[in-house]
Image (cartoon, rainbow, N blue to C red; front, side, top):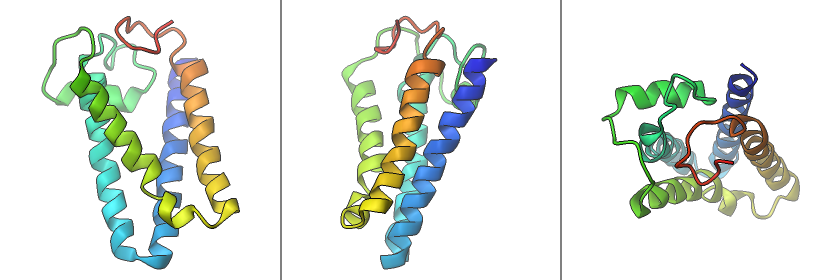
Length: 143
């Protein structure tokens, strides 16, 4: 239960960071803000497809309850080691989610600190609470 709580909190923090980034982008370019939000949604699905759909935990014991549920409706992939394309999918998604807004945040230290603070807290929450007890022996973060 504690893993699911932290899974929920970490996802909320990432969503807040993405919305925060979109709001900052929209001050300069509403169009790029919309592009960022659309790319972020696609990136989230790509992460779920690349990693979650191969995970043996899926929604049964998934600490990130919502991605686990989404993985259940995506095409089922064979459980096993993650391949290069899986890692490329996750890396490309992280680049879009976290690096895309940097152009608009780069000159405002307070805004970039807030954005990265949210992301860092979410990632630490995932590493120390959500991953702890995860049964996915194929995951590179598995202990």
